Length: 505
Image 1 (cartoon, rainbow, N blue to C red):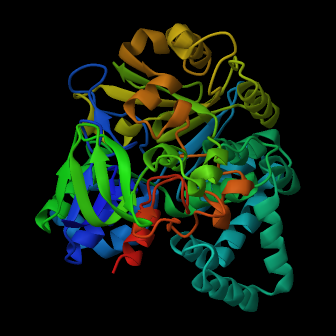
Image 2 (spheres, rainbow, N blue to C red):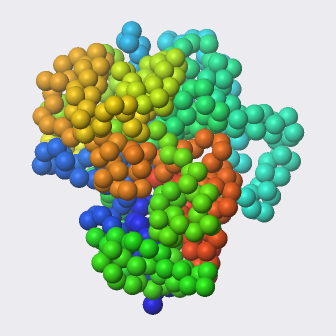
């Protein structure tokens, strides 16, 4: 019998396994796919030699997070090598304007003064605000919610910044991206620069709760930059697997769990689709909470999980390129992320259409240029382009994704050509992954929701995933949960894996 059996090898499951195995626990990780990593996978899906991060690519949260802090020496010894970028993102606009954010504060102010002069002072004020709030906000991301530790942290924040500032922080937590940007910025370009970050996390401009993420990512990019994994995001997965194995843990691919075994109210292991019984003292489910009712055979304890809602869908388009795109502003070639939305009302329309099951004609595009920072991902002189289409319908009215994905991708490439003339002539090969394809790769990405469930306020913070399934514990003894469907939510951070590892003694 193993001490801890972990279902799923996403970033949080592997983080928990690495931490627990280093503490001397006998750990087994089982994964239904043929590769470890969950939504962190790197494959040559277009042409040989072109390495594409199929889903997630930004490793900044992990690089600055608690798992890295605890396992840094082990992971580096296992071959993990980060590639930092001091030019994390920019936004391009139809009239040729561009706002690029670097880690050079003065350079950013010069850019803003040239493109959006009326917003320079607000940018300075928000930079100062992040500096003031960061010591209080970021520790919460590594703290269980709700908990005494979180309450203590919030009390210390109140004592430090005062009642008015604390109430303003709470107000920001409840604001939409539109309300936040209209409060702080004048120019439509600056508003879009910030609001597009909300779209990353299923916050249309008018959805309550989007302001905080827009604020943290917009200014945080300036302060902390971006981090990629050298050779691909799966370099992190390979390193975690190596740490687990070095400390006596075991991992198996191609093992589909059909049931979590429960006896007298306590989890005792799992039953696989092949009929194998794997017994354990503790079980950690690194799965989407919406999948747990089926694994627990639909008990009354799982009923509320049926109310756990997915975020909207995502499409990935991977391009192998002969050379970098000729962006309408050549300076865009230097940035790792390029956002094309372009403005708040466009984002709002995209979100409304997607929620209504309608294909948005000009959805928001998050375009990654990883080979700008890491040329090892492509043959010499060549490049890869990582295109995330945000946001899309989970189901299209009257059609299926399999029917429309390729033609829709053609339409999006045509749209992109307006911002990068001649792009189509540079494409050597491509791979389109529709929302339906995302779920085929990973059942946790339900209907193409890449976030492990919507992050709207009703199922975020201390309510994630649902009121009865918080703090990474479950109503079943010895059964724990982690992953993006739990606090602190989506992103390649490993935070919930760290938290759940502390629960197992």
